[in-house]
Length: 284
Image 1 (tube, rainbow, N blue to C red):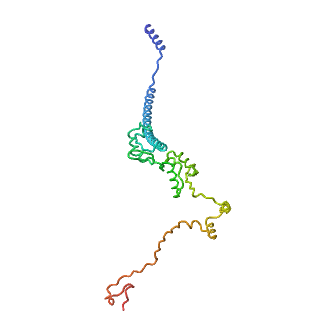
Image 2 (spheres, one colour):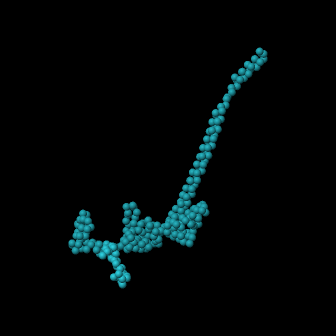
Image 3 (spheres, helix red, strand yellow):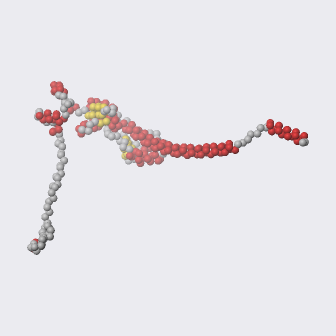
């Protein structure tokens, strides 16, 4: 063999050993393609889900903001009414004073046509809006008249919350009335105002009070008490009150049916006609 070729062969082997080669696997390419596809599908799905969730959040946020604006307006109108500012305002003035100038035209239209018009605490007058309390009271005299009316009609007291809502500077007015008002606290911690009718105040003899309290009535029902009073010649309060009207009972219909009478005809043939009501007569 030619020695030149042998030398070239040995040099080729040395070069091959000195430069290592790296093989590329086909599986890695396919894996990368699959992975990129999965990532793409996942990103599109997450994007779609994010868009849908953002849509729901935007709807909820918009409705929540809308009703939040309404609540802010109603609370502001109530506060200014309690401070004595009872004159009505336009919607632009309300939005200016409540610092709600950034709301859209759609929300303004909703406030004007639906929210404020249908709100039970808002009074609408010729395009202007005011606060509408349960009891519209101007001063302490109006409050005293209201309590007196409730007392005369037997309606009981009035909630302090309703008085504070409708009477400007209510704390000052209630303090000025003093002992003309009685406070009663309910089990739910709410306070009720009653009219203190001083004409009904009278002193009872101490001996009579002792006799009254010495009679035990815990184990006696109302029927026995009423029976005892009748025996002693004392009429109960129920007899002096309005009498109950008993319902009128309808008359029962009679069980038997009345006999019906019919007019007779052909009287001139009485001797000729025969009666077959009881059957065919026997032949003679």
